Amino acid sequence: MSESKKITYKSGKEPDAREYRLIFRNIDREGWDPSLDCYLKEGGYEMLKKALKMEPKDITEEVKKSGLRGRGGAGFPTGLKWTFIPPNNTKPVYLICNCDESEPGTFKDRYIVHQDPHQLIEGMIISCFAVGAKKAYIYMREEFPEAAKIVEKAIAEAKKKKFLGKNILGSGFDLEIYIHRGAGAYICGEETGLIESLEGKRPYPRIKPPYFPAALGLWMCPTIVNNVESLCHVKHIVEMGGDEYAKLGVARNTGTRIVCVSGDVKKPGYFEIEVGKVTMRELLYEMCGGPKDGREFKAVIPGGSSSKILRCDEKFNLKNPDGTERELNFWDIPMDFDTLAACGSMAGSGGVIVMDDSRKMSWVLNNINHFYAHESCGQCTPCREGSMWMRKISDRIAGGEARPDDVALLESVAYQIDGRTICAFGEASSWPVEAIIAKYRDELIAETSEENDYHSEEQTLRESMLIRK
Ligand SMILES: Cc1cc2nc3c(=O)[nH]c(=O)nc-3n(C[C@H](O)[C@H](O)[C@H](O)COP(=O)(O)O)c2cc1C
Ligand code: SF4
Image 1: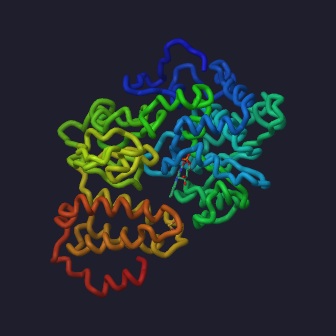
Image 2: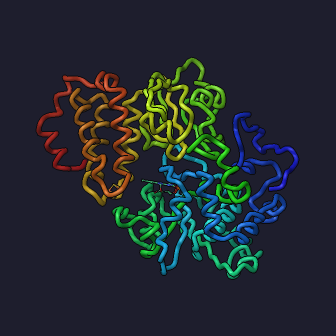
Image 3: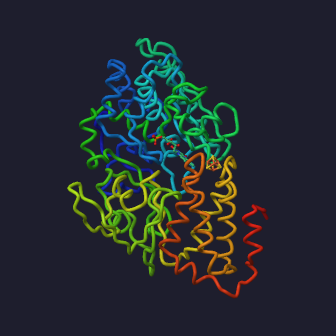
């Protein structure tokens, strides 16, 4: 990427001094547009030229060295995932870019596809070259109609310049990228549901094992599914080299990532940070301007709605590498995969949802339960019926109609979903419930009353017999 003059921003909003803009360098940038001409002026597709001169396995090696972990939710190492394609494979290999961006609280991929589509396309071409894919798909959520047009145009531009199509830049490598529009379902973000949808079927997630996409994916062929942001990083890894890239961030949690902060802060928005180099305190008080006037922070969901909630007054006992323990205060949590996991939550998709003391936890819980009850694909019973049942119970709690034992009932339903379903949606819907109850049980019980006697044995039985409203 060529060095350029000082960047100014259309919104007038300068990045925070703690940010490190690698992926979002051109987002909101004055004078920047999604055209190929603009991209080429800034050194666009130079990394593709560099990559095409490398051995595909060496690109994978650089990605492994970089330590890049997927930015879609699970934080799985990208280079390692690429090596799961069976070595003796004779079938076609596919690459799918997951642009479903459906996790509540997450709003990063949309900026890339709307404003910097060629960064994604370049990252995808390099990734396809590395894994040997000659066909790639961008699975784009229905709610991005404008982005679909923008990326479609960008693909056509890239094709015209021979960055895509047959014999790319004379390298002998062929690649076509297609956009596939979703129809607005959260479960299409789950990689195997996505693959089923791409094949033209209902997006029923597949059972893993055996359907790990890298071995048995699209049309039962090896398929690499990566998030938009993850694929963009590949271009920068080729530019910097894996070792240099790995110097960004902290050990095992390398590079930059975009965190999306929403909810009760003065300045919500996106921030690209070095992974693990910014603490919760710095993010919320300094970068986001602190709580709204007269309010105090109460809780944070750090990685999209499916991650477990953290109380702002919590303390955690963490293990050091040498086996000793240390206490970590919520505010000192560095925003990285491993520490958030050690604190019982996850970095997930980078969607940080902040709640202040004006928020009742019964409302938060009920809001989340409504989402998951609506989005369950319905394939497996614990999830289909459990998510609906959890919503009904939390409707009662939030509506002041619950009995105290409803809280325990809700908790038990969550634990009967968790770990018993085909896909991780089961955990995504039950973890928030488990964590909110564990951490705010008294607050929830305080909203219930023994007087609410309509909740009889019979009603519990009827609910457990799965009768819907
Ligand atoms: C219910 C559910 C929804 C998901 N939604 C998304 C999504 O919208 N975007 C995404 O990139 N990954 C999503 N994922 C994760 C994908 O299954 C997959 O792990 C990811 O796309 C892999 O890309 P990465 O390794 O680059 O992170 C979701 C997972 C689950 C269980
Ligand atoms: S866990 Fe839920 S979303 Fe996933 S397959 Fe089962 S019913 Fe569908």
